[in-house]
Amino acid sequence: MNNVQRKPEWAGFRPVRRTIGFFLFLGALAAAAVPRLHAEGTVLKDPAGNVVVLRGVSLIDVGGTEKQFGGAIRMIDRLTNRDDPQGSSPGWYPKVIRIPIYPPDEEDYKSPWTFIPGRDDFYEKLLRPVVDYCKSKDVYAIVDWHYIGNTFDHRETTRQFWEYMAPRFADDSHVIFELFNEPINKVGTDEACWLSVRQDMQEWVNLIRRHAPRTLLLIAGANYSQIIGPAADHPIDDPIGNKNYAIVSHIYPLHWLSENAQWYKDHILRCAKVHPVFMSEWGFSRTFRHRSVPPATIDNYGRPLMDWIEQFKISSTCWAASYDWEPRLFNPDWTLRCGPYEMGCFLKDYLYEKRNDDQPAQPEHPSASSP
Image 1 (spheres, rainbow, N blue to C red):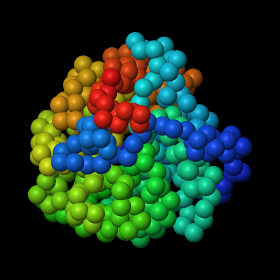
Image 2: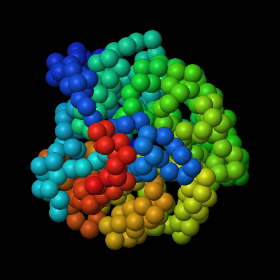
Image 3: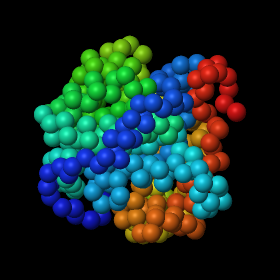
Image 4: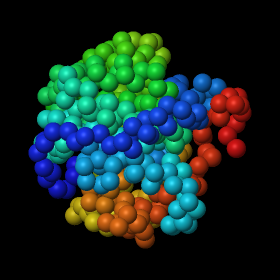
């Protein structure tokens, strides 16, 4: 999803915060209940064979969070605070946090914290501490290469990114790779659009598997990740042999409430018969309006969408943890946006409601069911 504001140009790295170094130490010591997940048939499972559904929140660009919003560590603390009475639940219970990384040539947004090929600053001073901190909080971390564009326009920069990141996170059981946020690739029929995306995704999957053979992958479709149905008939080949990936869908009110809503649903349903589906973006807010559809509410979008994806064991992350990126989760004072037209309290209450559903087994009882 795009930000509604133009951001400043790249300005170089800031000195690393001492607190981030401390949290790197914490993350290394934590014994978190985040075993490595894998795709099996149409669902995600843990090593004990339990079906797992991840539910959580997406940050905005991790560099932007660090520059303007107090830092990703503080944001993760906010999103995992078990003592937050806002809404109807006593605290936050996400199981996954998505960490978007805007590429250095992404036109929509640039920040001082940017991945630059050949430099270790971004990884060592920001991304690694944030990813490790997620583990210390018992949540999975999605490393999301956050392009919005045609895959064929960004082959080399995406190759450079995953050539660098894949080996560095290969041994992290709680890390998931999202290869390319929102491909556009409008090149013809739905099948042609997917095949265009598939060609590039296949190359990146092959590259990643040379370094990270066990990491769960999230693979998006064309048309901003709404054309995913053809993945059922034209799957990506996983070199490790068991298709350890899920297909990504993004569904906003513009899709769910439109006259063509069934078209979007049909793509998900067709894909979900063959692959796990992961909805890595959904969300609504009073300030996030589309003229072509009615205003989104909890009753016409939030709750029906969540109930629908639960039927198919679809994991999800809500976009976005911000007070000015749309749709908005927070107010400027970091209180949650609440009410029938807002997702803040609804999301928090939903995560609490589902906190024990479809969760990975605890390490000390690997074959036990979730409580």
